[in-house]
Picture (cartoon, helix red, strand yellow):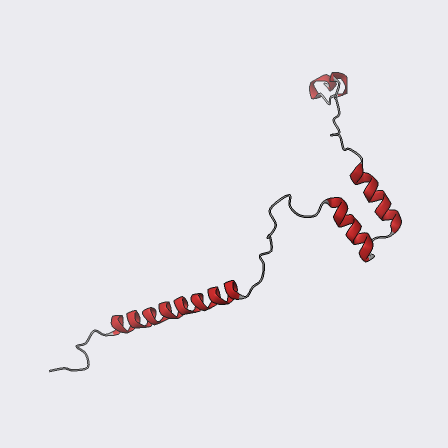
Length: 103
């Protein structure tokens, strides 16, 4: 005889609920992927490194749009066009902060 207390019980109901949640997540992920990849938007980092505009081109575009004034443009352009050498400082032995020398 089939009574109320002799079935699979709550473990079967829990398993069926989790399986339903799993398939909802899979379907939601597929819908998100379709919308994301078929939207036609270019990725944010589309250009490979080194293929974008140079610093001088960006500076000229900013000046043309009116974001910076002519004095700022000239100052920044001269800084970009002068060759930059690394600033090194040679520390002489007499200039070091030696704790043993002060004691």
